[in-house]
Image (cartoon, rainbow, N blue to C red; front, side, top):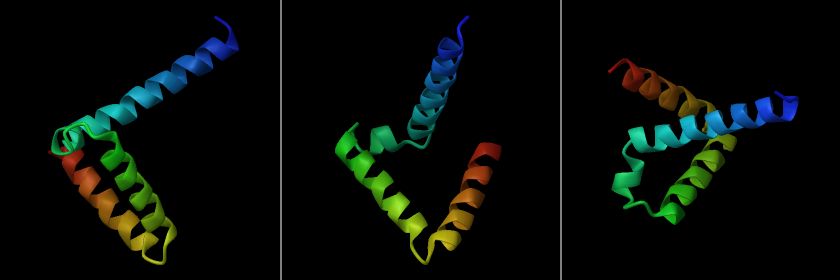
Length: 71
């Protein structure tokens, strides 16, 4: 298999896993699969992480995510 094919499959798997997290969190159902809402929330999250409260948000969201994976 060629290098570009391996890299493409890795990227595809990564994107599928990220999409699975969106579904697992219930975001698709809560937004009625409205991609504008989902994308807007992701932009808000990126802005939050870049702000002065970024480290606090990162720590909070990391702990919540770890706990959700355990549950």
